Amino acid sequence: MRNFFSNLFENVRLKKGYFITLIVLSVLAIIMAVVSAIQLNGSILPIDLSNIVFVRFLRGDCGFIFLVVGSVLNLALFYLAIVICCCKNFLRPVAILFYLYFVYCQAMIFTSIILIYGMLNAFLILTLLFVYLICVFAIFIMIILCLFSLDCNNFWSSCFKPSECQLAALSLAILLLTIVFCIIESILKSFVLLLVF
Image 1 (cartoon, rainbow, N blue to C red):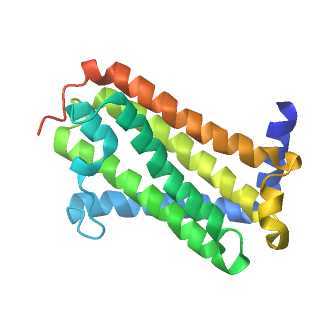
Image 2: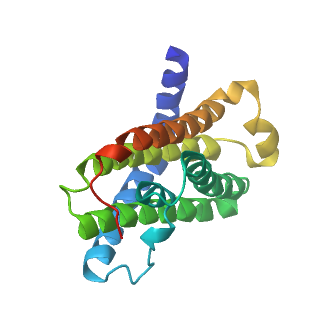
């Protein structure tokens, strides 16, 4: 376990420029999402909350299994897009764009829930969502750094080498984090006083 974290921090140190760039771009994407939600009513890239799986779950439109499958599938689509785009050097900026779009969408959803339901009504779910999103953004940044450190010529074979356990562990972590988020959300559902359209 100690080796895993030391290797992870070493990877961040070696890719410090990418790490700082991803942090700055993430903050800019969040700011853009918040401004868009407040000033422009989401008109730049509109988000329909009625299609968001955890909002549908809280409204009672779907069950727990749909919540887990929908959340994992949504995350998996972005994950696969990022991994595929990282296999070639010239596609790596596209991988970053996919990540930034993911950050933008999640920040837009978070801001929209605050604007529609208010902070007090949605406090429990917003706190859970905030912690979840910060963790997911951080893990995605670590995954991108791991992918950027792989040799493009042997990308697919390198991904599955035992020595590349960081990537596998981070991928498992983001999956488990999403499942835990769904479980806690289902527990909190009875305490949530919102999301009745």
